[in-house]
Length: 402
Image (tube, rainbow, N blue to C red; front, side):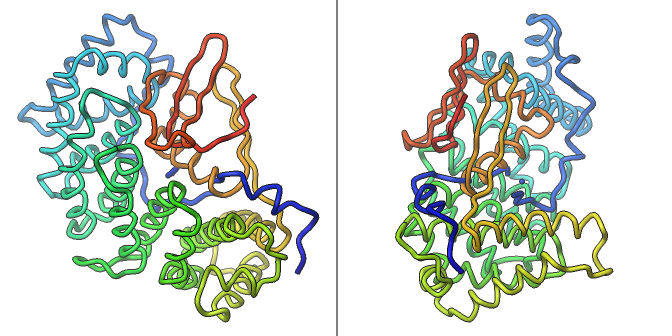
């Protein structure tokens, strides 16, 4: 099982790819917080946007829940689709951002299964991308509430959304230790967390969050975690009936495989050499590879034709990397003409985090965010520089930009 040429070695210095989608998808949906707004709908005069934005912020404190919910939806869509105007408003008024963050904290503290709590987690995820006043001071308080939502809330969609918000806040905030959140998502993934039982859909969300956080960690640390318990959990998910679980597990395995080649670029490509680095039991590595091959060939009638197609496509990409050393790639064209060339699973994980957070605003919306926060690591900052565009998206590792 030799690799083609020097694909591994040439790719070993590329930091590859939450997202949020090869796709690592959560079982959650955002339908409850998607309106009919589009970019064209938001082309109103700046004064009107400011007035409407002020009203939406005020409505977060209204007594009627329907008014508060509408305000959450408006803010979420405005930031996703027309971030430039909204973020400039936030940058110019610390009182507005304080009002939003305080309202979000109130919603989260309810610890209910209401749409408001789901909306608050969604809005918190997208706000984590921006350097708005002293936003980091709130994230420590959010962590405790989000933790409770994940472990105690009975609404699965809220539990999944809380995990996503927790991971994005950890990546973007300087006051939260990423390792703490990585540990937490890992316990959920491995079904070792306190509280309510962990269904497969929550495991998949935990894996998505874990993968995003893992892109910011050293490859050697990820291999240590993989050997201790993560790879074993992925092997079990690979055997789950859920296509989402299988695809997520396969992509995460491929990412861990990348980490093995980052730590030791001179690996000759023999399976035993790699499995020694990623799991304690070589048999699990061999069984997982055989299972991946089986799933790619699967024609089971118990799985819909659409799901079989998705499973085959995603897992074939995984096998192309693991068996043949061919890394996945994706080209993203942003509004204004900037082209992002992605290579490898690490980069795809990061792009998927953007795609998931911005939803219907991706890939156009990121160009509208000229003042996103810098990451703690200088190597994790991506700058698009065009004639009329300057945009910093801070969670992305070095890419090829044209």
